[in-house]
Length: 304
Length: 304
Image (cartoon, rainbow over all chains, first blue to last red):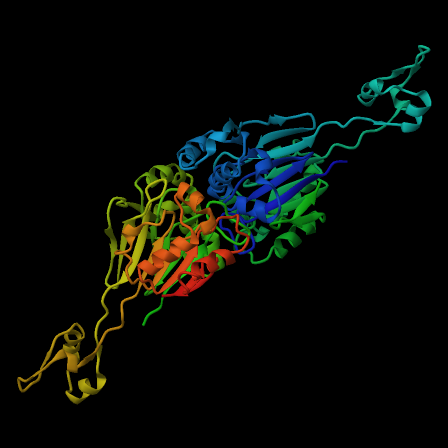
């Protein structure tokens, strides 16, 4: 299977700390890079963790708070300086363009590539990106301002050909594509070999859900059901549940509850308040509910 | 003497590197902090190098290229979150406000302090800040867009009282302020003691000049004459003199020439192109002309 990874570029909440930049992640699948959120310093983190910024063609912005967007001007500027060509697609609230346009005026050399904005739907689930291998959906979260989560899900893989049968029946190469897609095989003598005798099942499809800056929201459970890897914000420990509710955030225990209800296979928590000098209490709290929990730390890469 | 320092927060040119953030410096005198330029990540560097962002009340922006301003939204946002009150004065090209206003709309809690913009004069030298201890002037540089340098100069210090004479003549405390300012002393018997018998000379006034993003510009020489510490950009080595001219930058040798002509006491060079993996060739080239040259490195503090 090709590698499908998430690299944490920033894991703090609003205030960066000595170890944590503001929110940003990069998802990599099949030689393509997808950036999620772009807090200040994202371009610096990309460089530090060896990710080529110029290869990013799609950026997904959950919401328009500064700690999720203030890295965009610098990143776009450096892309321009780096000679990026073609199109850069930014999926975000429509107001982002209003914010960015006056800034981009101050960037040289941006004529070489075009920034295209795609407004997100904050009312209901929507497909926002699709290619041969991957579908990305947005779905509403609940924060102080409109906010979306993102679900990355591989498309169904092809069936694996059984090489023993292929060789035995001397199936021509031109017929194998159809068989991998599920077709039966008609032999030269007219007899039919059913597909299931010619193939093994496909690799399972893998999925990743990103949920930041939200109260715990039960409505997302069916959307992220059985997700392989769930990133959910956990800004506070559960003793600050009232503060979490007031600021429209989630506690570590609540994030773990979501993972349980969604039957996620693995949980990453992040967006930690700068009041926590170490992520340990947040991780321990989440693990007491959902043992397969890991903290987001800047630079860490998770294989999905 | 009170400490008068410059701390380098960022020393790269347009593209940040693994070791260098984009341009920013903080000048400290007399418990006051003055920020010069604010490249992306300035708030992160302030935290890393132990400088309290909330104590900054004046920011000076040389010009509106992204690598000198893209840290402003995040810094202001974090100041707001940190509970800053009162006024934040930003001295910059008048277009900065056009850029910042749409951004500041996305920052919470900014009601507590007020951002006040002061347009710079890009045509001639001008006093832009003054208090009891310090004068700050701007002066034109020459870049692709309007650009200013900044000169920080202490005001004349008071004379030092000669404690032997003060005690011998039993000069009352109320008269000493006038003597420190240069007055003679009239004794109770009516006789006059000249000031120079009562005082030692004042501490010398110290000065710092900041010149970034410019071709070498002879017109600045009289303005920065005999400056104690000169920061001058040196984006390239002198073999790339043509490229430097084309991009309106300065070579290390040219920066050293400016230091010689200005009779500066010490030179810091910075704003190094990311093509230089190490600053050594730039420093060696400048030192061959002006030996008292030092490289700007992020986190380094220079005493003036």
